[in-house]
Length: 120
Image 1 (cartoon, rainbow, N blue to C red):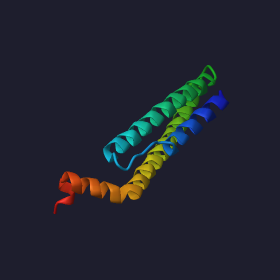
Image 2 (image 1 turned 90 degrees about the vertical axis):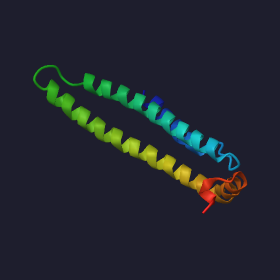
Image 3 (image 1 turned 60 degrees about the vertical axis):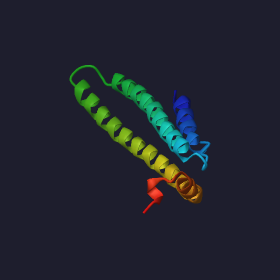
């Protein structure tokens, strides 16, 4: 199970680096970045949910069960928030890097189409 989790996280992280972002089609590239971000969040959420279920199942029966479950949920929530922040930061960087790399191409495309963003 641990190997599967590691593989999923690495493949999801690698997805951001392997996006085919075309400066000539900035809207398509932005949509692709957003799709990849949401896909990674869903994958990591599924993994997180599975790991939480297993952690909760390991809590002892009896009086200690509810405090154990509450603590495991608290830890899982903190871990989820950390992972979510990492994913969001990574895709924000991908978006900014794309914008910076393609700034000239995007500006030329906006001028050619008469985009309001280029008309002052």
